[in-house]
Length: 230
Image: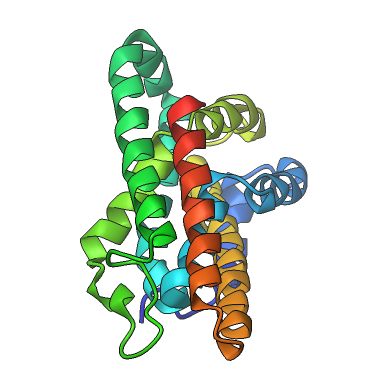
């Protein structure tokens, strides 16, 4: 199943660590891991979206959103290093349209949940309607949120280059650093999604399905407004 294995364990597997020794500056790496863990675990648009979907559709299906988000984060991190971010700054209109489109979609989803309608809304009885949400929709939500997040670009443009040693091979060095970033990001996304799912179970025991929909809808509204106006 998607993301079944704990990614952080895979990233720190002894064989991979041996490979790191030859292509990474271990002194920089010792500061890189805690720095990017703190960046990832700090509440933001992607983490809030993960918690919201954890509430409404559960961790298992939220993993598809995580897949899109990780693809987006990988693109942003790579682009921040190779300079594609500069191109985006030269075409601010395209970036603004992307932000508004993604933000508007998330706001629409939040309103649907507030009204207890639509594919993400939880039903009081019967099968969960969230199962109707397609994997492509979830992947797209995560991807757009990651790509259109200006704070994500800012973090990577400012924070990632200092951890790259110009005296070591660039391609393998960047590949491993991005793999570590994605592992840390996935661990934090799962942490937030599990928190949302726990809240789901707690409120469902007391029959507060409408309240659950409104909490999740409010989070989605917040992410959408944040994305559109940031």
